[in-house]
Amino acid sequence: MWGGRFSMSPAEVMQEINASIAFDKALAPQDIRASKAHASMLAAQGIIPKDDARKITAGLDRILEEIAAGRFRFSRALEDVHMHVESRLEELIGEPARRLHTARSRNDQVVTDFKLYVRDWIDAADPALAALQLTLARKAQAHYDTIMPGFTHLQSAQPVTFGHHLLAYVEMLARDRGRFADARARLNECPLGAAALAGTSFAIDRHATCAALGFDRPTANSLDSVADRDFALETLAAAAITALHLSRLAEEIVVWVTPQFGFVRLSDEFTTGSSIMPQKRNPDAAELVRAKAGRITAAFQALAMVMKGLPLAYSKDMQEDKEATFDALASLRLVLAAMTGMVEDLTPNPEAMRRAAAAGNSTATDLADWLVRVQGVPFREAHHIVGRIVAVAERRGVLLSELPLSDMQAVSPRISEAVYPLLSVESSVGSRTSFGGTAPQNVRKMARTWIKRLEKASEKG
Ligand code: ARG
Image 1: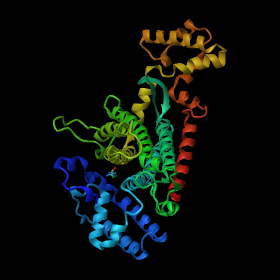
Image 2: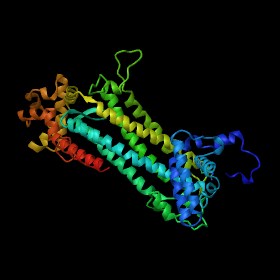
Image 3: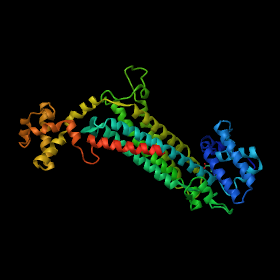
């Protein structure tokens, strides 16, 4: 393809380091889509004969079929996907194939293909993110009043409901979807026609190729067009944050399914046994979701380091933008599917959760709040009083709710019989009615709102 001024073939190791076909063949569908748009535009502008464009289009369609059917032959000597497609096209249609590369370069070609790939991925990932949200929201609806301990520092803090906890992840995923949507909106400018770096002397119609490929507008600066990989970085950054969210839920599932917690159970479908310890049920899928956050976040770092300090415009360094990106995006799709399956699969154990929620005087704050609300005690003072009462209960080896009234009144005579009902976990969660709070009525409403919104969107989509 570029051998005109060369008299020797590249060294074996040169081919090995230079070739990208082993991984960029994943771009073949996008490469063919972009080449078809380019060929039609060239013909419409009278730059190549219309008949050549027709042959090019038919040939490209055939190549796509060959690749899909696994009948396409890849060879390292042809470097990358662009050269493979073009060289096969020449085998198929001869001379007209040699006109396809008019007014373009592999530099604008590869960035166009890669943008289309990332955009296709976002378009497919969004429904997967929405499906996980819907699964979480439905679980939350089923458990809007299932009480569990809420933690800070992984210490029992205040009781919450399981539904509330699950809806926290629905919110995170909503922000994740927003980040991907933002990245998509910004990436949707077409770089095709920037050519090698400076634009072209041919009378191309960039708006035509842009429209044919579903972009909003052509990129405005040819140097920036071929040098830009922000779209991949932004998408990887969003993917990294999503992966972090999923790793937190995965970690919680790992903890919850331990016999020590026993909060939830995963079926045989999402657990594995141990080859030596017959009693074990390991949450391998959750552990792998947790672990895959490593490679997904690393992909952002890898590409950031490739791009750092690169002078404008294209450098071959940028060929290293693909493998980690492909891997990270595929990994995220997999962990999303696995997490959706796991959330669907898991069954909570409400008794174990409630027991844990009631342990550790998790309603101490409710007693302090009562002193504030009913007795007009300043919160700081109320906090101190309850702290002393908790210390007495601990000394006696009983829970706050089991401590005799006389012991409480010895600390603060303002306390009456009326506080006992407030010390139950049910009363505690029921009282958290502030907007966004854990009260079951709030949770049920929020779960319903999400389910309605997500179901409506999925019908439309
Ligand atoms: N395989 C190359 C890449 O992925 C395509 C662009 C090659 N351009 C060049 N000037 N060598 O970046």
